[in-house]
Length: 215
Image (cartoon, rainbow, N blue to C red; front, side, top):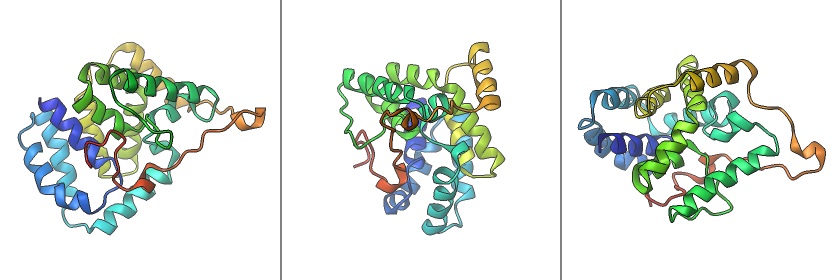
């Protein structure tokens, strides 16, 4: 249960902060205090780091970190598939898993946003969600490292996310190293006549959630 609570708090924090974030902040702090230390400590560190900031300051930082820096992308398949035609198939893979579990994703939403995957794992299907997160641990680890390098307080949220994941395997560790060295594939599908995938920033939808749990 502690893992699910930590994941839903992290999911909430990883969408664009708005007035709902302000209203839910104290409740999230109370919930974090009841989690295991491995999850509660980094989450509480985030709340401590943002305690004296206005909502506008947090919003500005969110945009600067997640919308303006490719290396801090919250879209998991952008790390593994870049701007290649294979990314479209990877997104379909996410959608099919959600649909099989009774969750409908609209065509306007991208199902690989980390906040969406975390919510799915916390509230909809922990088993399938755990597998999705495990399969994409390499980009999650790289995102965590990028946020620490950027001195972003969102790094604390990723610390909590990583703490909820299964143990790192040698294969995943190697994949993370390879991605860190080479970066995502750079084949731009539009150049070959295929349809490119439009990457609408998640923050442009405010705090709306694909799975509807925060509505």
